[in-house]
Structures are given as structure tokens and as C-alpha cells.
Image (cartoon, rainbow, N blue to C red; front, side, top):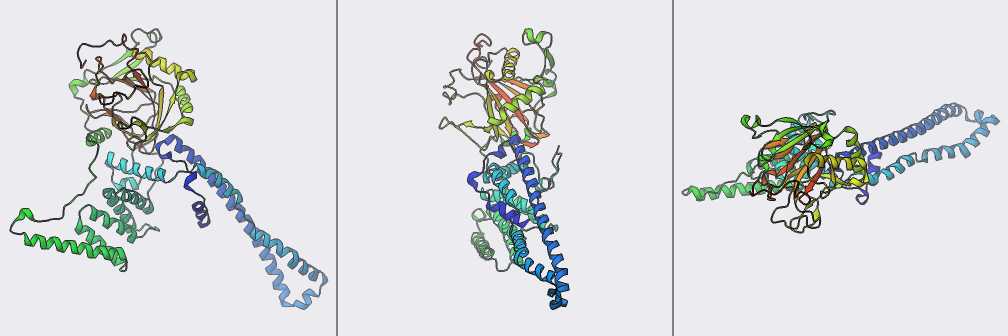
Length: 534
């Protein structure tokens, strides 16, 4: 096993690794098959080594018996001409053959396979991305470290545990990002598992080293001092801890003297500030958004709920839906969000996914400063674009959207297929271009995004809701359904209540596809209203 680890360590140059696996669960499934193939190859190598050792063992046992007999009466033994001949033959030929057998490298097949497969391995970006995803899920769904470490997540089929090394690695990733809040949580979890008796290559000294500094960085000097003393009990010669101990004691003494000198004026007293908690967020509606992701804070009242209905929808007497109308359900009133049930078949979903998989690439967003597409941490998924002319199924889906919405899809964008990765999400955003982004869709020449049609192509075990923080709405994924809403009022003004987000996927694999319909071509299909907000 040690030999295998060393080999892998040598044969993983970062230049050959393919980044971005963590942004698509669909592509990560390929890694399972890759690893399975490597395990099979490794077992073949082990079998070859065992066969080789068995041959050597039989040779050794045979010679042990022979030499035991020969050494009792050497002269009498070699006095027999056959024994003399066989001795010459063994030492001249057979021992050379044994030497060649011992020196024979049985790992060639395994190494060759590993060399081929390693080009498809994840790299550091993927490992860090997956670690950050766990931290994101921890915050969004209010999960404590022990729950995650024990794998007690809702809807899981294959329970998994985090070792001390895993917890330590998560803490180090947070530490590298100067996220001392999560560093403390995960180093404490690693320490707790060590104290419970878990055997690990990671020792308490290493954990306490990170933990004490993370606590200090959050302003808890008393706890940092206590943890440092605990570290020094385990390793009295620890250079950094000894330095930190002196520094912490100096700071505390200095604060104590300062407080004494200003005791007559309490307002001037210097005290150690506690800065515990997650860092200040760039997203103003973070709390509201995460509550909705958990199914909390939904603002639909019973009185409004009574006005939401289910109906059969024929697309304004469209011939295709008169005899077989679509099942439509009101999800929300303002903005009006409707869900169509059983609107895309399993067979169509599989075709769309098969078409998209080879083209999946990291999803991008518009950079308002440069106007260019770029990747962003707040959108963790991979996407592909499908044109109607390349497959009749895609063309049929496009026409279905047109028939049910009454909007012209000839000016719409191509069908975008997205697969979310570990903790995959798309934080609150608008689909339409705001007034400060006049050139967002200029190159298309089709105006702004008037409406959004979103297919759910998979069920999600936990998480993954589409939420609207401005109005307190949550829409949950259901395979074979689609939701539709207008991004613009009939006047052409943007409806800011449609700001929405794709919540992180907690457990499962989320596939969606969406169609953004544009203003051009809708002049007579959705006439302009007289009021700005109609």
C-alpha cells in the first residue's frame, strides 16, 4: 500500500490535471468509473506480485530441504555425480533465473494504466472547490461540523464519514482563505475526534497550532492562550507556540495596564474585541436567501394561497393542446410563477443530457465592468448550449415552449443545459439586463430577456430550490416539470421582484435546462401596457 501511494504521488503532475470537476456532479460520475478501473488494475498488480512471491517461496522451500540434506554430509552428497551436476546447474543457471524473477517489475501494467488515467484526475482547484462547497453547505443549511462529519445528511443513500485528516484538511482550506471562523469549527471537530480515540496520522499538536491562531485572529485572546498552553503540554519545544505564548501574555499584560491607567474613564478602557462569526458578506440578502433555501421564511399567506389554482392549459386554444392540455399550477402570485407538470418526458431528458454532456463547461456570468463572460464563485455549475436545428427533440422542446407561453422563440437564446456540482448554486441574480447594463445583450440584437422558462430534469434529494428573496418564494425541483415567469413588465420595465437564486445542492444531482425569451418578436404577442409597472 505504501508503494502505491508513493507511485501516485510521483505521477500526478498538475499540468495534466483537468480543473472544474467539482462544478458538475454529472462529470464527477466519470471519475467513479476511472477510479474503479484503477482499482481493478491495482488488484491485478497485487495478484501478479503474489504469484511472483509464491514462485519464490516454493523455490526457497525446495532449496531449504535440499541444502539441509546436503550440509549433513557434503562430500557424500556431491560424490553422487547427479547431485554434482545439479549443483553446477543450479548455481550457474537457476540462481540467475531466480535473480531475474526477483528483479522482474510486475507493476508495468498498473503504472501504464495510471499514466493514461491520470490526465483525467482532479487537481488542487477541484479539491479546494469541493472543500469550499462543504463549508457553503454548512452555512446555508445550518449544519454543525459533527453532523457533516458523521454523514447525517437528509436523503443520503450512501453514508460517508469524515476522518480526522478530512476535518483537518477542511480547516486548512478555510485557513488559507483567511476564513478563521470555519478554521476554528473544523479544527475543533478534528480535535474532538482525536480525543474520542480515532487513530490518525494527524496529531493534536498540528491541530492545536492552527486552532489557537484561528481563535486569536477572531479576537478571543483568552481561549487562544489556553489552547497554546495545551499545545505546549504536548510539545514543550514547539517554537511557534512558545513565541505565541510570550506574545499573547505580552498583549494581555499590556491591555491590563492600559485598563488600569484609564480606570477613571471607563469609555477609554481597551478591551479585547470579540469578532466571532462568519466574515462580513458581499450579498445583502444572504440571510433571507439561505432561509428560503431551508424552506424557512416563505411569505405566502393563507389568504393569498387561496387564490392559487391548478388548471388544464391549452396554450390559448393551441391545436396541439386542445385534446391533451398541459397541467399548470400557480406557484406564486406576484411575480406570477407557474409550473407545468409532466411537460418533458424522461426520454427527452436523457437525449438532452446526452447531447449536453460532451459540451459541458464551467458556467459563466457577465462581468459588469468588462462586459465579458467570466467564471464566478457564486455560480458553481457547468452548462452547454443546444440549438434546435441539431436535434429534432430540441426543436420540439422549443416549439412546446412557444405554444404554451404564446411567445416567439425565434429570437430566444439557445436552450441552456446546466448540471450543478458539489454544493452547486447560483446566488441571487437577475435574468434581465438592468438600466446600468445597456449593452448586456447588444450583440444579440433581440432586446432584453422578457421571460424565463426553466425545466427541472432531475429530482434532488435535498436542497437545490429556486428561490426569490425579494418576495419570499421557494420553488422546489421536480423532474419532468418546468416553471415560467416574466422578467419584464408589459411596459418593458424590469420586474425587480424576479431576482432569484439556485440554492446549493445538499444531496443529489441537479440537472436543469432553461430558455431565455427576448423582447423582439413579442410586440403583438404581448403588447406594451400603458402603466410602467403592469
